[in-house]
Image 1 (tube, rainbow, N blue to C red):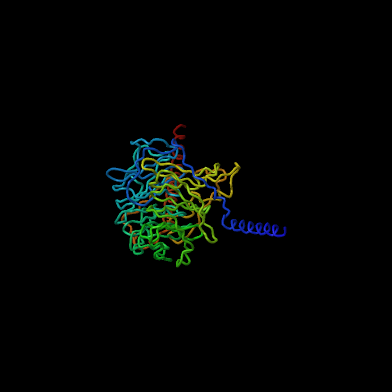
Image 2 (image 1 turned 90 degrees about the vertical axis):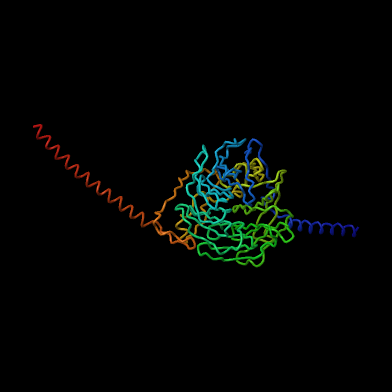
Length: 487
């Protein structure tokens, strides 16, 4: 009898140890049960000739108003801009944005104006477009501004996250140019930092630094205003296939790449010490480049492989092992490209935490990522305050050295968009001394100009006042003369 009770107690101890181990293995996370679901066919965008260009960009950009898709175009480059509600079959004669003379390689919506989009092309130019509020009625071939400075095709376009009218472009000439779109000028040119093709560029949270992934297998952290490399890691991934590098909320860098044996990898790096990665996850063997999409509010990273038919998602934490696999959304059709909706465009009433726009060969299919919750109340833990559309800085302030964190908004009552300001480009006098591309141009704050203008207006008002008072005297005199004549 004593032996039996001993066995029972041993079994109990073993079960306790097993459950303790399981608690350590099965990490608690509110995103563990996130599930993806493709929308019904009538909510897709059908009969779209998606671009066949061999370039590893997303080919799709979305915001709370529009979805933009790079398409096949004869005799130049074009992309579609569709209002989100314009689902169903898209007519072949639907108007396009078609000002480029070569294929469009990358597009990006301005985070501070939902009607402004930038495009980079094989024709070596960057163009900025203002889309009418209700979408295109006729094809658009005249951009608001053309930015010329690259000598080879422009494959990367990305707006500054917190400063108005600042746009970064990178071309196959291995240089990065930062533009003040408001004046149409190239303000900073980073041209001797990359010996080979740049695969991607990403701003950090407040836009004070950028990180790049290059064909020479190095990732670099660059201070663009000082024009210096502040961190560099050679052979971040051993494989020869393209890499990607993005900044996380805490300043760390997440990279995707390939091992020497062509296995796809996900790695995390501390920018203070780039010698060794904090962690490396090996996933599978496939040729598709992994495009990372990061949600800074929830610290969830979604990996969409080009040519894959799945989206993997991971949660990043500040404790080892740092990167935690959550789940995979799998479908039958491979993806040609992917658009990622900003947080303010999601349906908070349905606990939607991400929405992707998956490009097939002939259509665009939205995929909704949801956290299942029973309550109908607003879920504060899923929707912390997120970056809103208002810029923290003007372009001139950033070029002068100021930094600003994103201005956050609450999604509690559903995001209500404000009125977008019309985008204007201030044309400078061609006879003014132009900034040299290779150096940071000292930008005037515009204060002296506005003061001079104000003085001019005040002068005009004073002269008008004088004229009115003299006319009043003249009227009085004439009235007196009239009264004498009447007598």
